[in-house]
Image (cartoon, rainbow, N blue to C red; front, side, top):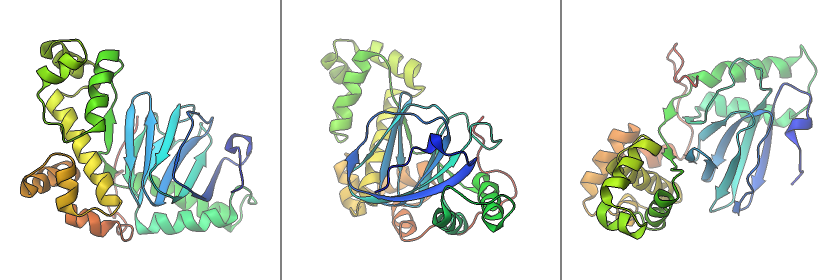
Length: 268
């Protein structure tokens, strides 16, 4: 693997493709914005705000100078679009998005010529199309907010280690040396979610990760504490807009291009 420092590249926008082994990366930041595309495999991006899950054919925006860490349980191919921070489409916060077939093809083609291309040529025109497609991708609510309070961090670490843990908030809060009432207030204040909402989001993201790694719908549901598969399917569909079975089919290839004229998501 060639090690490239993207911040030393003068080109305002370029694409790099690399094959990575399973890894847990170091915390770091880039001066450039990144559109990090998991062409295959499953990537998790952590920031001080929380965790973003990036399954196959999805990407995560990482703003300039955002401290982050990447983790992957298996080897994967990563395609990353780097953008100068003053470009108009650069977001102010992270977000996970689908990558449709057209953008997938464009990113793969742009990765062939990489970091250097002449101005005004076909490569620059292709990059302009890439940039035009970015706001046409469908957002995926694949974010789990992280608390800052050390007691709540301890509580949430227990659940992340075992999402199927079905103990109530009072019992879990006691492990962290606080009352359930205090923990409930902290969840809302620090994550914007109730305890029940936060635990459900954790379970759904862990299930999505398991599905992406080849688990069946039944096994993915059971691993995160859903004994009733029908309930899991309904909750999954309400959260992500597709049933787990349709989500599994989407892993085989990118979705069809989004033909809506309006931007799919705003990051300001």
